[in-house]
Amino acid sequence: MSHTVRNFSPRRRRVPDLPLIAWLTVIWVLLWGTLSWGNLVNGVIVALCVSLAFPLPAVELGLRLHPLGILRLLVYLVYDMVSSSVEVTRQIQARGPYPAAVVAVPLRCRGDLMLTATAVAVSNVPGGSVIEVRRATSTVFLHVLDADDPGAVDKAKRSVWRMEELVAGAFGTAADIERARGPVPEGNGPS
Image: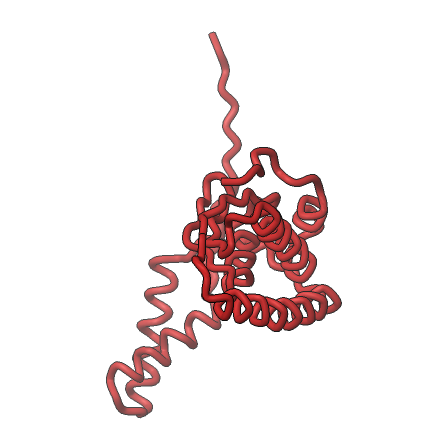
């Protein structure tokens, strides 16, 4: 006979979330189109009922703000935007064929926030368009110009990994920062 031990946590007390109540009240008043005491009171009542009847689960974002890391990220983004703009302009003025490729770049951080922030930061730089993100494998697929040069593909991958490290340093947890500074993932050959 096997015994199953179940840990039942005490029922979580339903506490109204004040920012949510305020937001729902504002939406209520905007939907009615008139600011009146009646609409305001009814909005608060409806917002309370909705937030108590349908409580939102607690969400841990894993977002940490590191001012020095944010400054490093901003400086690097400006530098990367300027240097990439010059590089893309040079490639366009060469008037030759533009061999391009899609390169898979596996990231070291696994969190949704780090994956999304890295993809957005990379997409903001000219010449680095993220065309797909695979959440399951933490892989971004990057459109790379001048792909017949093997150095360009490696440079693009190193640029994404550098951006990932800076994003983790700006917004990540200690585990994210450590992971982003770790070794490059396997399977990072040309795609």
